[in-house]
Every structure is written in structure tokens, then in C-alpha cells.
Length: 63
Image 1: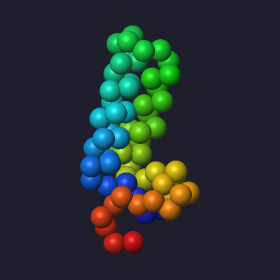
Image 2: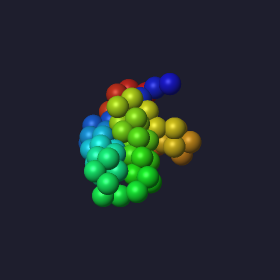
Image 3: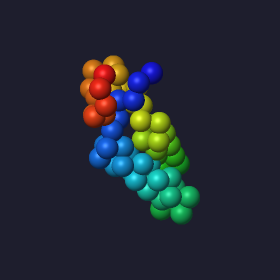
């Protein structure tokens, strides 16, 4: 599978994922904060299955 998440999108996903997980561990939000694992993983691996389904690609690399 090719990378379809790039640059700014990737940074935002990683920050949002870490923020949600951190807030959950700190007790600021409930167990729903563990959903932060999804944007964290998609940011780290540069692959988003939802982007693949809708045909979106933010990665600047050639397809």
C-alpha cells in the first residue's frame, strides 16, 4: 500500500493522536480518548484507509 498522507496532514494527525491519548491518561477525558490511536497510527505510517476509499491523496510523492 502506498503512502497517501503527507506533510502538514501527517503532523496534525500525530499531534491530535498524542493529545487525545495524553488527555485520556491524565484523566481529563474518558475512554473515548483512546480513539487517538487511529490518527496517531495513520500519521506515523502515512497511510489512511479512509483516504483510499474516497480517492484522496495528500502525499506529494508521485503516484
